[in-house]
Length: 220
Image (cartoon, rainbow, N blue to C red; front, side, top):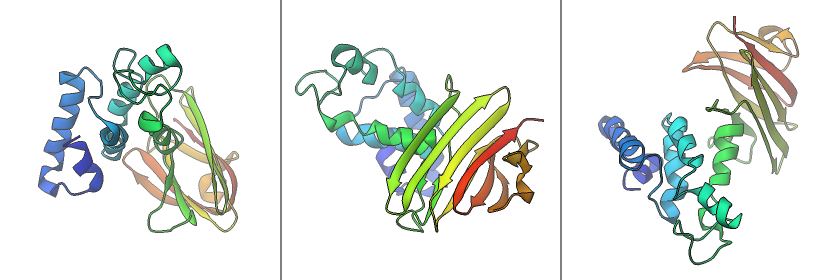
């Protein structure tokens, strides 16, 4: 928690970020064998901070942890979320339930754009995680339904997105730089309503106008 919260808040000095992140990951992976040791606030912000700094795989290992303590322990014993990792006190408590927001933000990839409020512009940035070949999610906004659905099969990543009327979406499509990018089988640079921005850090970046899209990144 002492490392995760400052990272999440953006108050770690620039020259110390790498070291703080390294210490955080080492504590989780080595000292605690991919388990959380956090309370209410840390349980929310630990996975968030890890994802924000490119460690979604570490957060995913925590989420999928089969041994105590973890969400799986709660599900196996009570089928509900408990108030404490000890599985005592309330057996149906929202306290550790914040992880559902992580699924929307970092698996389906639906994220707000803080420079454009109320989903006038939003971000879709899915993550490919170990053992996961498909995911989907949607959220109702003041402007309409925002949805993201992706599938990974045989070197082809497919992303279906719904962008409400009078909105824009910033898309981060995972794939190799040399991948062929299409929208409904049309090369993305020729497709209507799409602007190709460029490639960076393992993602093809695009901007979509309102509409429904089916984007495909095919490995060459």
